[in-house]
Length: 447
Image: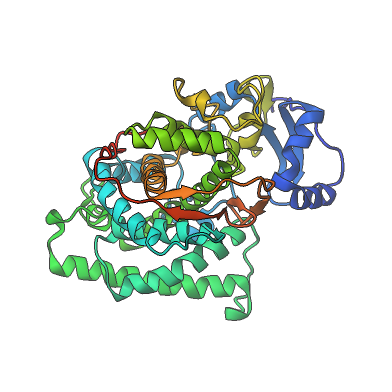
């Protein structure tokens, strides 16, 4: 047995640390970092002893560890998304499944989704009120949900109307249950887990119906939606994905491609209203047909307002060396995303919202990590990035967004995601369309 070497951390009992984590915004990691440095250990009722990292070099090393040394943290979203989800799979199974899911989110197929994104954004923005304050988060949720539903299924109909109602509730409840103990008794609709299982059974039934319909119609080669691609995909040995795995992966895509992107867009509205100089520069750039500052703004929003607090790994071997530390088997290691994003040695004056820092310098993927990293980096990062650019581009083109001197909105936890406490309040007035204005540049290649 190799002797482990870990950094110091708070010595309070685990239940005291748990109360602190629940009551302090963003789990209080910043305050602990101020006392113990960029690596420390904490006690968690869910994960036990936890090493928290905030040093980019050590984070890079963690993300580069092979699956025999470190795998996805447990428990995770796999317990609500299903055993066939990428969150639940490990090792070779994860690699094989991820390989099948890469094509829909890259290259030509990704570019084809831009039209869907534009149509759904225009449709939702047509209903925006003018001259009065309203929360943008619900609107962004509708945009991203409709986009991902069309990208996944490629059509509309009664099944999709029901999914529009079912998925938001399923995702919100599931994100809150993801790390909680699973009860041995099913109390049905009288318990949170029981309500989740009822909704999940309904979701499974809808997906099975859509799969059967697609297979019966037999036009999969002519379709470009993600469901059709999954039904045609084959593993290296020639076998297809099971219907259960397709249902789990589709729920993963629908969940990951919906709430986090919408929340980032609501944060973008919240940040821009409090930085009128950036908003003015963005509007000017849009009139000139540019996009560099818009791209940098999305990156800076994700740096200053990361929707996810942490990503993690569980150590699978004893005595794993990691930077200054030697890790024991079974240890959970969490990467504090905000700890890196707020590190003044990485991002000078980190509290300042300054998209200019990314106009000419692209972020390092071990210093800017809103999508996680390594073999488990979000598969839909490029899709989400394109989506955010289309929505922000349309907002700048169609509306004047009123600035405000109100304090920044507080962080509000929605289980997994952190949203603006008031939903990203906005006041807008529609612009007159200028027929002489340059056409917007395609964002399909945006990062």
